[in-house]
Length: 287
Image (cartoon, rainbow, N blue to C red; front, side):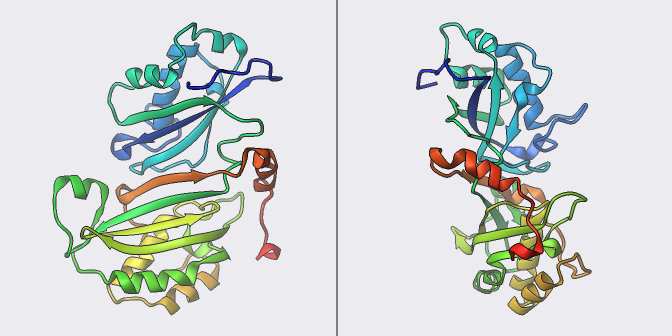
């Protein structure tokens, strides 16, 4: 921690943890009995430093990544009592201590700092940004690339993919491009989507206020069809308008090409209000 901790706050002390991880050998973010997950590894390391916690320090994550998905800019928060915090003693280099405990090296804690008032890692977020990488016939081949990019046998037209992707921008019901759950809404605001080829690798950059389950990988599957010449911009818009999953043949692509890049937050003065606003479930009247 670079800044001194304010111990005068009412209630528990809230801390923000920024981290990255290689998702290859994890069964996703969330704890699962008997499986190695990012959360379980992080909680175990925190238990060593602060003592066991019955509720996992009330940990909340900005975006729950699926098995095999990577993260460059994941954010979580935890709550500590004064007594738990005092276990640190004089050694307040929490990120250093965590990284020593996370011995396999596929999780890296970048920072551990006291969170500003009103901060909630999930609900205070205003957007999330991901990148999905595709190595097609025109891409260089190496084990390092294939580990973090989907390998596609044919050459894709990234310009057509980009043009078609613009049909999805804006506030829509993305039920056609996700796996709906029994709770919550599938209405999201897609703020940015860009398809480019960098050093031979196709990168699909996508940012939204939030993402429904499998939404990014469903969109990528549709865009690959466009790049293959098997779908058009009009097809993407038509399926979007259906507002339900259909037999399009657009599969949810493999997770290993996907990386969570960044979580966006408003100014500190707006964190609490944003957390309240985010928890309101959207309806069709919002579109």
